[in-house]
Image (cartoon, rainbow, N blue to C red; front, side, top):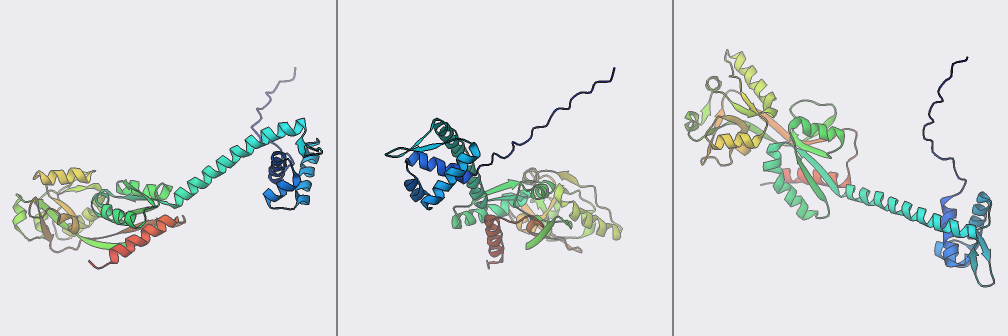
Length: 315
């Protein structure tokens, strides 16, 4: 007995073309609803022969009569009534879908999603976003507070339009536009022994353990490398994931850290002291990271231009 074989399941296939045009259905509906070829021609802004030709082609494709002329007007046949009901419902559904797509496209053009690292999300961007929204109230701005790797991943995945951060390493996926630079300084609680000093050397850092956020690893590597060349060792830093936790510890008088000068100056003298580090330049460049391939929306282009102008403005 010959072995039997299972008949493979057929995958769903799109239906074959029905051989009719959308414009023919729209014209048929116009004639049926108006009860007149001439009125339908006026509604569609075409000639009456064009309307007649479209209806004739539709009837030929379907192999049935759809419209009949009476002494007073044009009426639908039973088949025409059936097609009128089905086609009207189908085209209304299609029209609603198309309108939905276009509405979403308009919203996308009027929406910009920004991925930014915690410090910039908390300190630098809110006033800039407020000023931008005052100038462009129709644009919806979304700010996503993300850690450095997640911000770049969001940009790469397309869930963010732009990223505002300090790009610590070369990344071929993005192009980077520098907006400003800032020196890294030592920030200590006011009660710390180093708070009374304006400057410290690398030998002083060899005696104190830093507490930093994880995104500063490239800065720590540079600091440790320079200390190593001088025969010094940087104590293993304590790393935190959240900037708010770090600031809370500083406020409570716990630990010392590295921060950009602009941020370290906040609450200086009241809770924190800023101390310069001698013998090493720790400077970071902040700016806009953009995907190489993706085309920016009008809103995203507008926001980037606003940022560049704001950061280049005097004062």
